[in-house]
Amino acid sequence: MTEAVAARQAGFDPGAKKRRKTVWLKRCATAAGLLFLTGCETLLPSGGRRPPPRTEAPPPVSRPAPPENVVSADDSRHKIALLLPTSGENADIGQSIANATTLALLDINASNIRMTTYDTAGDPRAAAQRAVADGNSLILGPLLGDNVVTVAGVARQRNIPILSFSNDSGVAGQNVFVLGHLPSQSVERVVRYAVAHGQKRIAGLVPQNVYGQRATGALTQAVRAAGGTLVGIQPYDRTSQSVDAATKALGQAGPYDAVLIADTGRAAMAAAPLLRRNGAGTAQFLGTELWNTESALAGSIPMRGAIFASVSDDLYRQYADKYRTRFGRMPFRLSSLGYDAVLLVANIAKDWRVGTPFPVQRLTDPQGFIGIDGSFRILSNGLNERNLEVQEIRDGSFVTIDQAPRGF
Image (cartoon, rainbow, N blue to C red; front, side):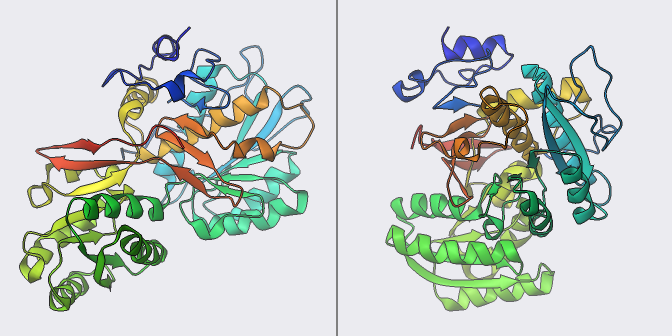
């Protein structure tokens, strides 16, 4: 069975947009009819409204679902904890990721996995302590970088590995693996593309937060590596006065061919008119993977022609339709991390004996994996490496103008 046929049988068609599979992919062997491959393992399948009430991923049909955060003795299944904010201000995104893990478990009928959700909104340390006390062998999550640090302090006492959904590279290492989309990679990708297309003089506009700090370092390195010139980087605190002052400072620093707005799509839309007014002229707007989570960005007239680096949306669109059919609303864009994490673990679980520690070494296969968000691999330092594409904003849509590499 070819991988394209297997994907269509599972409800996903990786060739729906273009039939462009390569020899590198064809070397992989199809498993479970879900494009979940060994070696080159393929993991199958934007913001939205509040998802429906959380439902724990169900165990096999013959067994009733256990109460929340109660894990009974079970010697036939791997116990995996899902730590997410399912209440409070981040409940929407947390619930969307939780729903995605449920969808993944149902899609592959993972009868050897028992997943229990623990709410990190109130007290992430207490959530981690309950997860450890319940005998879980692996933790998926949490979402926020600060929570990862807290949870890791508890998990390390029992040598329990963590697959976090955070995008903060600073929390990686010592049995903590970061699955989130790292800003450094999208910055490097879009800057390299811009410089290669004649935009040699690059400026940066970054928020005063951890993401902005990471983007500042990444932009400095990316411009140097690409052979460009860094005109200047200006931070701002997301107030209109601060953004206005930062854009004026960039204009005074000298002319630039392109400016990286290392922030959300909504922040970029607010900054664009100020940049034009304060000296940007016809400079190219550059963005990061954060832009792909803002649907309103596609229809923004001031942002037409702007480009950004992001994971591919080819399989995500099909996953989102499947999610909407089951849960009655669209998923948050980052929920794909939860789906891919479950399928990654399920593949490893086929050869993981129940009752033994999670085989961490299986995570760092140098050939990598292919998920909803394209190809990626997990590195021994706890970070991930993803192959990204460059997209352009055109008349209400995001158009791929430079395809992601197909392998590593």
